[in-house]
Image 1 (cartoon, one colour):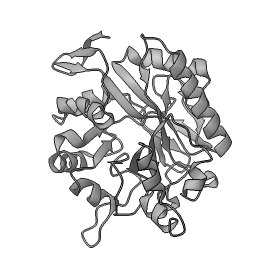
Image 2: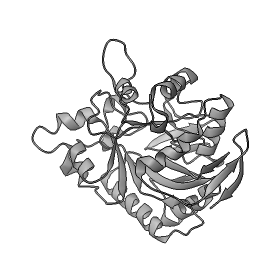
Image 3: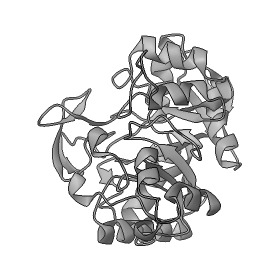
Image 4: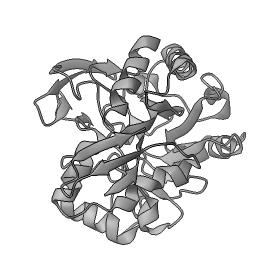
Length: 307
């Protein structure tokens, strides 16, 4: 099989590097290493943090993008996950840093390198009665809005759903939910962490049978411990423990994935759930093109990367 290079749009770090703490050199090092894994483009993803550190890390990532070379994965922009999410579905995020989802609060961290924002749509609407809806504002700015860490069923203005089924209102036969709306709206792109830990096979089958094949985006949501010897680390202000398969907080909350996209593709292929067309979807979603391709064997091992 021959495919385009992979694009990772939900990616907190790897090789011991955390985008919320990384230096410019760290980001450049990660981008160089991930290219060797067949990943040609990345959207470094920032977990909920203070306004000051969020602004600082956006600038770090932006500076790295300006300095990077052709032998690295292209840094395509920042994915801001958090700050404007629902405490009911906070996951590992620290609610001490949450802000009301208003245009005024977004302007505290606004930057033209923010390309994706994950937020809770229901909160944006409840806080927009006296001003412009944050979703509408972001859409006008050309920023992709994704519903995540939320419970609302009205996804108006959203172009995507963040890590489908995880940290969102689930399927309920008696009422509408985030998951149902994302499944049934053919215009919504759905991220999914298909690492064998975050979503079970039946839910994956439901997603793949329900959504148009061009609206599924594979993501890793990978953590700094991925491809490293790190077994204990601080992420989102919490102590996280990695046992070789799962990374969880002390109370058992999943903190993210510990696999990269090539690993996830192998997992899906082994279950006969992998669709090669999934690789193209981020290209269409973000309307971008990257040079290079990957040659795979029948077991989805990478044979060759041509950049």
